[in-house]
Image (tube, rainbow, N blue to C red; front, side):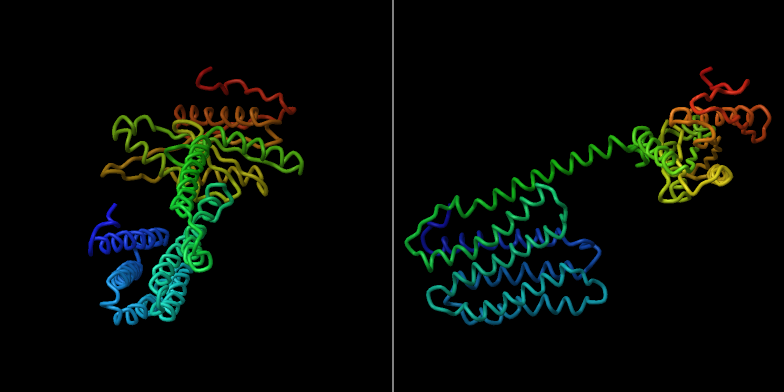
Length: 397
C-alpha cells in the first residue's frame, strides 16, 4: 500500500514489511523449540535474532548513510548466537540450537562478502537474510513434524520452496533480466504452507477423534471397545501358542457414597487416581481399561499362571485399602475382584468376561454378608459351556 509513497515514507514502508517478514520467521522458529519457556537462553536467542535482523534491515534501507555500520552488525549476526550457545552449553544442547547457530555463522560470512558490492550488494543482503530465516523455519518444522503424512510433507516442501524464492529472485534478476514474473508466482509457496498447515490441523483432529473413540475421556485408559479388541487378540495369541490369558474385573466398593458425600468432582479425581495406580502396578504388555462407571478390567498375558493372576488381583485391591485425600476430604474405597483364566474357565472372550463377572459379584455379595473375602471358584467346563454354580447370580439376576 505504501511502497509508492513519496520520500522516506516508501523506505519506511519497505523496512516495516521486510522486518515483519523476518520477525515472523524468527518467532515461528522459536515456537518450534521444545522447553523454550523453561530455558532462559532460548529467550535471549529470540531477542538477539529479532534485534540483529531488524537493525540490519534498517541499516540497509537507509544506506549509504549508515553503510559503515553494516560490517559490525553483520558480524554480530553470527557472533551473538554462537556466544549464547557457548554460555548455555551445559543447560541446553538441542540440535535445533546448533542448526540455528550454524545457519547464522554462514549468513554472517556471506553478508561480509557481498554487502558492499555495487548494484547487487543490498539485494543479496536482503535476500540472504530472508533465505536463512525461512530455511531455518523449514528445518524447525521438519524436526517438529517428523511424520509421513500429506500435511507434513506439503508444509515442509512449502517452507523449502518459500526459502528458495529468496535465491531464485536474485538469480532471475541477474541471469534473466528481461523475464517478468507476477508477484503471485513468488507468493505461491506461502499458500502451499497454509494449505499444508490446514491439512495438519485436520489430521491432528482426526487422530484425536480416533483416540477418543478408543479411550476413556476421563482416565485416558482404553475403553470397552479397545479393551474388547485387545482381549480378543490376546485370546487368539494364547490359542495359537497354547498359553494362558487372565482377566481381572475390579469393581470399586462404596463409589456411589463418594459421589454423594464428596461430590462428582472428587469421584472423577478418584477414578483417575485409581487408573494411575493400576497402570503403575502391571507390566507394559498388560492392559488396564475402564469398562464401566466404577469398573476396571485388566488383561494379563503370558507368562501368567492362575496363582500369579490371583496375586496381581490381590495387590491391586490392596492398593485401594489406603485412604485418598481430595480437596481436604479423606476418601476410602475398597474393591471386589473377579478372576477368570483362558482356556481353563472359558473358551472365548465373552464367556471369560461372564466368568470373571460372576466371581466378582459373588465375592462382593459374600463380603457384604460375611464381612470376609470370599471368591468362589468356578468348576472347569468344556469350552463354551460356562454356567454359574448355584448361588452365583449376577446383580441383575
